[in-house]
Amino acid sequence: MDFAFDTTLKNRTIFKQFLEDFSLEQLNKVPKGFNNNIFWNVAHTVVTQQLLVYKLSGLPMVIADDLVEAYKKGTKTEHNATQTEVDLIKDLLFSTIEKTKEDYDNNLFKSYNEYTVSTKSTLTNVDEAIAFNNFHEGIHLGYILALKKNI
Image (cartoon, rainbow, N blue to C red; front, side, top):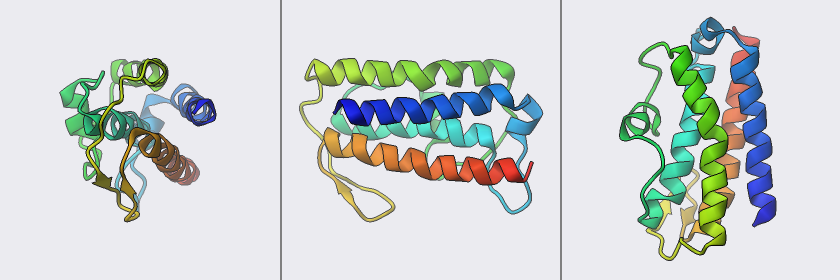
């Protein structure tokens, strides 16, 4: 499982670079033909990881409910993110994965509520959730690269 966590952390390092390299205006821009912006995509990955790994395992998430409501599946950019929000997500990019690895290593993930994802695959345990999360984050990295070309 170390490889999966390492992959997540490497992807999150790329996300962090976008948050640092682009201005707040660029992070908030929703180009024509897109529903969301770079910031939404990064925040969405933080929220989705927590939902897939913690909530479906019946464990408390380490992020606030209002963050979940703003960036969960089916949401779209509703407001311009502030620098404070960008800084929060930047911190959560790594703290959430470090906590997940710690909890995983301590065998906290005992049960899992099956969930069928948009690709029609059914997640049945936390290992599958962690693996799928990496795939999901890769999809959003692709969206961000497309957005980057249009801002």
